Structure formats: C-alpha cells, structure tokens
Image (cartoon, rainbow, N blue to C red; front, side, top):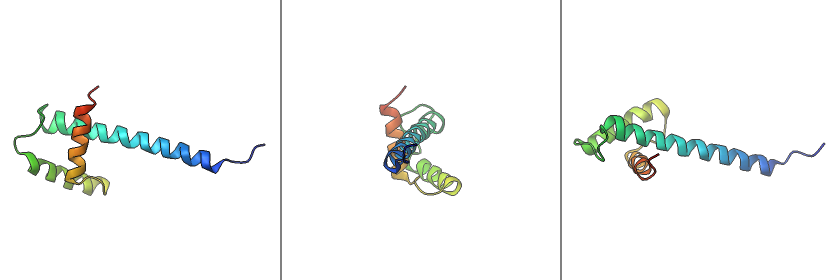
Length: 82
C-alpha cells in the first residue's frame, strides 16, 4: 500500500474548488445579465441594482458579493458567453 500523498490531494482540492468558483461566478454573471438586466449589457438603474443584489447575496450566502465582484462576474459572463 502506498502512503497517502497530501500534496497531490491538496492540488486536487484546489482544482475542484477553483472549478466550482469559476462556474459559480459565471452563473451569477448570467443571472445579472439575463434576469436582472433583461439581456442588456447594463441595467437602466445601474449601480443601485448591483448594490441591492450585493446586499441580498451577502445576507444569503456570506462574503464575496460586493459590487466590484458582481461587476467582475457580469463582465466574466459577457466575455465568455456559451
């Protein structure tokens, strides 16, 4: 029996978490563009919309959903449309 390779395991965990975060950010960007902005590149009410969404997501899911991050998620979705 071979000894457990902690370095390899940590690399696999890092890869899995990274992949989940990329998918999550893309999906949030998609929701912002398709649902919140009705497919427009930007909503008419702009920054206020992202502030409200930031507050709601932070309350529901915790840190990581400030307005800057939401803008980056929206941009990520728009750049990598599938």
